[in-house]
Length: 505
Image: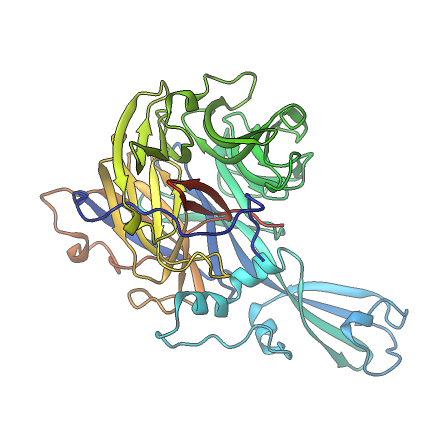
């Protein structure tokens, strides 16, 4: 089921900027690639972050098949999986990872279903058939039993478990390495730190890897076991929004040391309930929150240091009343949705509150959900926000300049989902997510593949992306990455909600 940051609010359609009247961006899809399957199982990318060598690192999930063999005398006959170990009938068990196809062939209850090849299936239907979302969200890291089989004196059980991975890519999209992790909780942050890489899950577990992707011994567990949104600081410490947004003890900010201990916990005295935390430069962030005092609830935006030793000036004082944070960039600018002069607008401000850009959003255009990402990038999606699935195909990805002019623009095929984006060292944009097998422009192995693309400035002297000989499947989107909850705010007397995929329990 869905988890919501804003516990008591209804889900409404999100605001959308007018595409008519916006100058076409001088951009091109440099490439679109896919991770493919891992050990025969589908994949999905959730988070992406730029690296200092010009490339990027991705955190995602796949599935693994496990075979558990119980030995001993089975009494009574017809013992079910639920009874195993409960009546002492079976003794020692051996659990081993096997090829994913074994789970497919032993799916006696039809839990996995058959992957259809029909291109007429909708995006949500195809993604559901792939089972990657169901296994990694509904079961959320817990094994999904597929049934038991009696083999002589042995009872054999097959089960599926979600497995995380971290993958490193060069700026040209070439995959350098991919390492799986026996953890089923969703990755919410990845980063190059020192002489290696780190991945953080929503459970608050930190995994470390060498520069070549070799897993380092040991893990770090933070003192909170459920993180909604988090970022690594440059020294490996973590700033995070803790817990679901349902009461005064959740939605607060916390800073964890590299050993997982709490350095700063803003829960005790804070009246700030955060729904967003976005990078705004090295170890600097912009946070969006509801300020609650008695019956008064105000939407505010504030600039924070990554260590929360103190905060910089609250940005909301210079913004329109009720401004809702939608994105931020490395210069420390904030992009907000706010009411001003009787109109709903997308507005950008610098860290001193000076207005940089302004665009009107019309009521007629408030029909598409949007997802505000880091680096002044917004993902516009197709579909109904009231759909029980919280995955929608991308309509457009737009990367804005500080003044809200369009820098890059990408149009989706209708068969991909965008989860996260990152601005690379050269100013290009890398996106990550998932594409389904019904994608008419790109072959996908299995039901769904984690994918990634790169948007760059168009050189007027080179051909368009559709004709470039060095780009394979230029119109395709190998998949896109993401995660986690639905936030909201009422503006202009009607609901404008900003949808984000957040981590689930």
